[in-house]
View 1 (cartoon, rainbow, N blue to C red):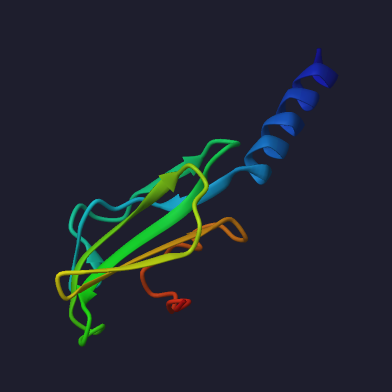
View 2 (cartoon, rainbow, N blue to C red):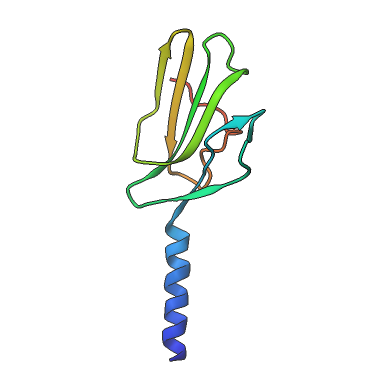
Length: 106
């Protein structure tokens, strides 16, 4: 019985080590999450993402930011009505979608 308990504990730790943790935030203000620090665990077919929107001439003045877990996506940058919408996905490290990590511009 004790060996079975050890095996279950090992498998639980192993599964936890393989899961990807992402920053989850629906809205930021002053580079902080409005709802406080939250996380999500990416499912096997998901990655972390962060979507930033700003006026094309002023990256420092972010209009909106959203982050969380999502289906895989590509690095993407769109321009619409004077706004730049930058989408970045990652899976290389836990919390790789933190707002304080610099942008990879296209």
